Length: 78
Image (cartoon, rainbow, N blue to C red):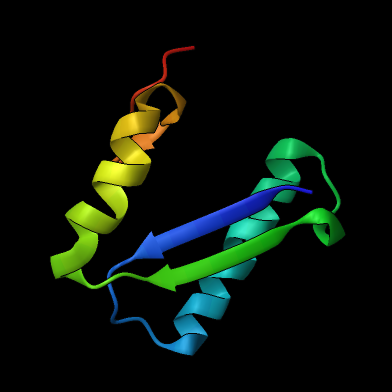
């Protein structure tokens, strides 16, 4: 049921992406108490020059109230 999407600039190998997906899965299972079989994880490369138009403007800015961490900084208070 949970869907986790990671969008990032290109440059990581398939092995790095697989390792990241596995680490994200394990952290999510532990934090949410949901079985690993329930998760889908997508990793998508977005070229740096397209980042602002493809990710920031349509996905981050309009959902600011849903952002928990932005550029490594927690933006949600407890």
